[in-house]
Length: 293
Image 1 (cartoon, rainbow, N blue to C red):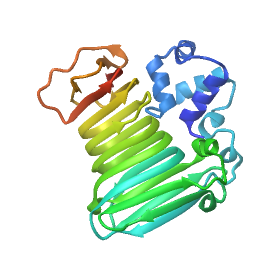
Image 2 (tube, one colour; image 1 turned 180 degrees about the vertical axis):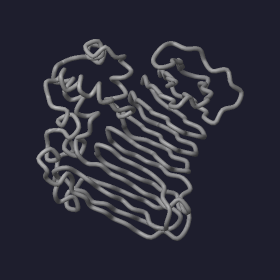
Image 3 (cartoon, helix red, strand yellow; image 1 turned 90 degrees about the horizontal axis):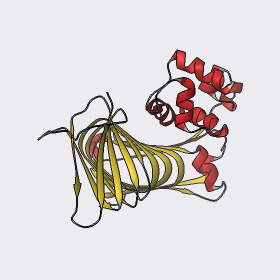
Image 4 (cartoon, one colour; image 1 turned 135 degrees about the horizontal axis):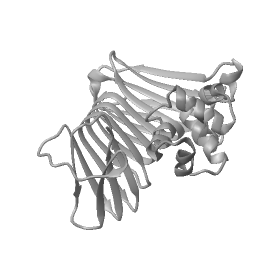
């Protein structure tokens, strides 16, 4: 279990809100949010304060209280790979997973890697189907029914690596707690349901067609980020003082766009050009763009 997950688990066990915990530690609520979503890691002083507050050891916060803490093998893995020799459009579907990571890499192989802490027979529990016919490349990761979807949502991590030389655009449909798109130069359209989206070193057009509340972290993102929602309230954290412009799109429906800086109300940026363009579309939806200093 990751540090972020352990902090959130221990806070929820005690029934504290993020605001209540922040007051106990004398830090901001935004700091708690960053720690629990992986946007930042507590320093040594705060790690010690957290351990004292929860009544656990620092090792428990770092390593959890599962197999990793006992010195047992941390994870089981299953790897499926195929050679790619031409540019493809990728259509990716992942049933239920804890986290899905998508990146582009050098070379000519597309790789799908499954990992879990206690699901030993991953190849039997999850079917990985690869269809490379024509220009489209379909990747389907499906639960065979050997394990419950709830367990897959707790443990299964799916990492998909695509050859940068042969990757044009990607459509991803998933049901996961977290999606990570990193070190990628391509267009990505995301559907399904995901709570947290992390974009790191991404160059391209990212479109999020997700009908639930989301938290999006954008670090070193160049291009366009579209958030298309119905009846949802989401937030985009723009890291490292990245210049951006943001607007709403569409004539029908109510869309609200707000701006904050480190969680505090702020004015909309007055820029004519910026490396990151953010657009909100949909109806009965609200988006906050939070600049992180």
